[in-house]
Length: 176
Image (cartoon, rainbow, N blue to C red; front, side):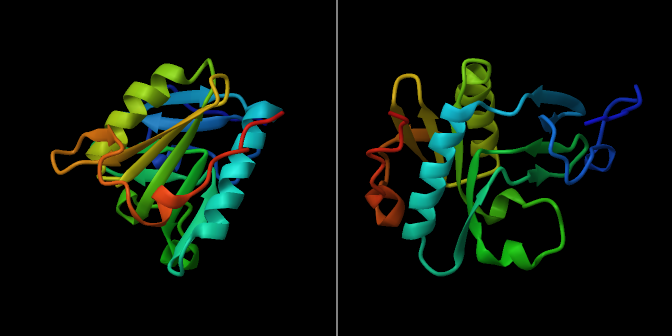
């Protein structure tokens, strides 16, 4: 992959490459967060979660790997969760970006290099964007933390856990 981005900051969504197979490029307040493609164990967990969510999702929801969730503003923000559950209408849209208001669940599979970003920064941003559910899968510890957004826009574990997401069986999502 070759990307040439000028030095003019802040950057906007239009400045980023589209349909790229290279590293994951996220945008936060005009700056870039670049992470390499994840390793096989990470991808295994992503695949297992995606398959289980897709099998359990009721009509009206789609499960997408690595979707672009973007919020435009003074400084554009683009996050790319490992798995997204979104309103099915997003697949009919020609935009490369999903608005956070269409997202039911964002899932991040934690890596050593993304631990702080996933647990602190992204947790805060998804809460600001009012994404109802945020899950963090730590494949090193083999834990899946299921967080639910509360009325005061904070995530709490186990708060209001009901419905098909609460019933999802996550046993066996870890590589052997």
